[in-house]
Length: 83
Image 1: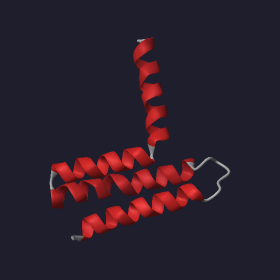
Image 2: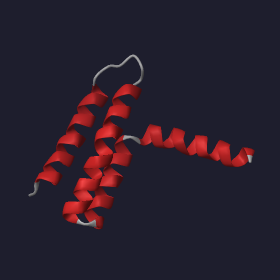
Image 3: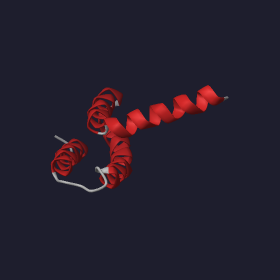
Image 4: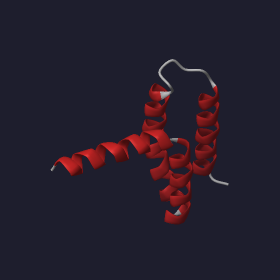
């Protein structure tokens, strides 16, 4: 097992632990930090293990950070609809 998969697993465990803890801002600050760490980590996983494993890690990250993705989709939909 290489270091990128270990780091991705640690990211997933850390994200789940952060999700369990109480938060006043509904975890948005933690989501921004997880995104900032996760994007380069996803590139590293894809570089070391290939695009299939990278896509699997992307799907795992998207399942954890689903609300930022939902809000991004709504924002894009509003921007497209106003043009």
